[in-house]
Image 1 (cartoon, rainbow, N blue to C red):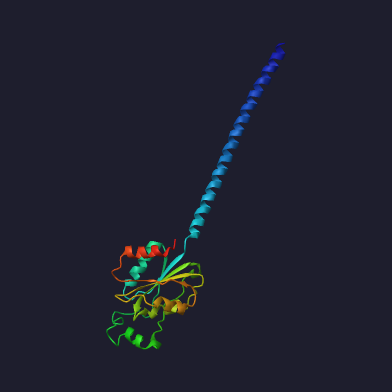
Image 2 (cartoon, one colour):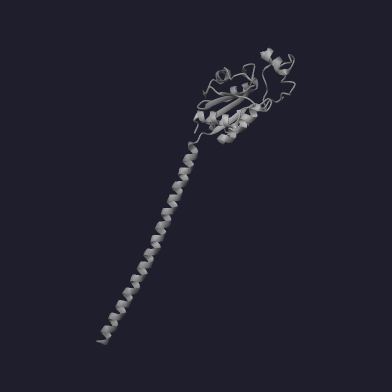
Length: 217
């Protein structure tokens, strides 16, 4: 009889121990499953962020500035849109004397009066990763109611297929006129907007209001 009672006691003790081990094992399995779910959630969040970034337009602001006014406007656009920037630079920069419109013998006056002399060699017209841009702003000063011919080769030498192109200009009083349309005809590709004219007195708020009206985001 004592042997039987001892046997039953050992049996019951073994059952309790086995039950406890099974419970601990289940706890570890539960923890592993939870970690796996958290990892998947993190991956999904990262993909969403990448998709959101990919949906935003890739924007370039290319400009030529003769006296610094166009550069100021370009810098504001770059800052507000988080865009990339490309300065269109003549190999032979224009001096203050070159830009004296009141002097019939100045460089710009001579080039204006003799269209065959208007070709301006640029340092480069190649923009790294140009194909990746969805939207290209092109800035320039107005010279005699037209875009400065300094930007001509940039427009001619780049392919704007599939891109939105937005001209902007600077002048003391002249409007943007047909300058954007003239550049669009010169390019032959791209979806060109009408564009906007600014002056040296244009404020950041005015530029921001114009950018909002474009609905680029």
